Length: 294
Length: 248
Image 1: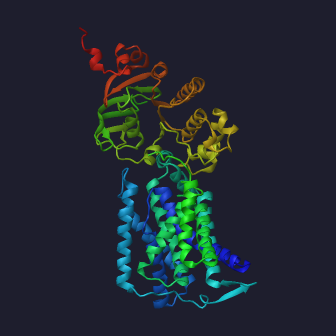
Image 2: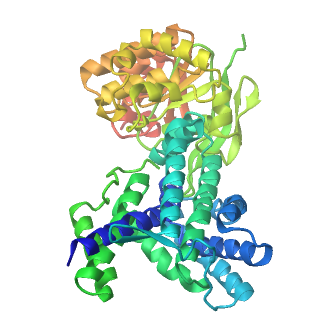
Image 3: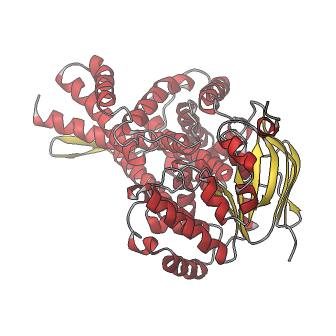
């Protein structure tokens, strides 16, 4: 192993990991506020990638400009799904039921995408997608750097929203205890709906970067959701900072093992680390051991 | 002033596994402390939750100043001037004491009003000023309870609902807590109190209500209820029927 390979793995970990963290941030917020495990998050990413694809192919809209359309579109899709499917889940079995319901939503979206776009792989294009620059011996793809900057910007905006706005106070209070939040006048239902919308909206940028750096089809969500779920489990359910660190760790470890040993073991190595961390901290890196008051 | 502040009329409520309240009828007069006592499982906490909107009655009505509360959200009920301090500690542990207290005025959008009320609350509850920037989770159980009291007053409520506020408190803190309840009452709040520490609570209460098996079995002044010979039977695990049954 040489220093260049190590630095390159670290670079990939930070640049790509931040994008995964952005995709997972929606998942972790939704779980934290609503106790909903949104299995459809992976297919939201693929849906967002297809929306960028449709805008590019049919209206020649640049991928980044297209985010001005796809982000609110994904927010609205999230809000509608929450209102139609998720808000109906009540009672102590809500979290368990959410797995089934969001899986059904996943299949619905996946089937629709397959029908509309066929099962052939596509990839998002832009003049900047194949371009890169070099610092020392390390190559930096424009799209990866842009993805990192976009993810950092959006995660920063999410952080700002959570810690500097009135709505953020509602979200944090709902994250901590929904009953207590309701008793101080927070409209927990509204917070849940908007949070689900935001969770879907962040996949617009994530999906665009994912679609520009990977060939994808409607079934790509299977690989994505397993990555996103492991990120929020490793980072700690409900923790934004945990998702960021876990996203970076996931890609970094995968790349390191690929360089040192073989890419075949990249995913396995990550899961080994996940298991070891969970043995040490079952609540994940930044998760809290706290019983929720029903 | 109206003769009654809250009226419970045939309230039936539960959690899906059967009714806990089986037709509750009584009235809460404005001002003073109304203390609800009864054995475990009699429906005391459920009754309080029906007022604050956390549990929706299946049947019956709850009137607050003549307006039916049934079907309103906790937020809408809060807007009417009804606050509840729940049985379990309800502070947001990761937020500071001051942030928690400010959240009590979440519905008040005028920052100047919130600042004024916070200043008043700081005088009433010195701990709010002393531990302002400490995380709420770092406070003891008794301190958390006082901060919860402070928070519930931020909206200047008319009715304060307290669900077993003494739970888990040591005797010294218990004294402070009952003193605080008196202070709230003397400030003109109406207090609806559920308390396991029945003797002390009834001594303080203007009115006592005994709940058993989801129904009101006895009402009267706090002292009348306290000195009723049948009350002991309830707290010894029996029922009023057993107490009333002629002994052989």
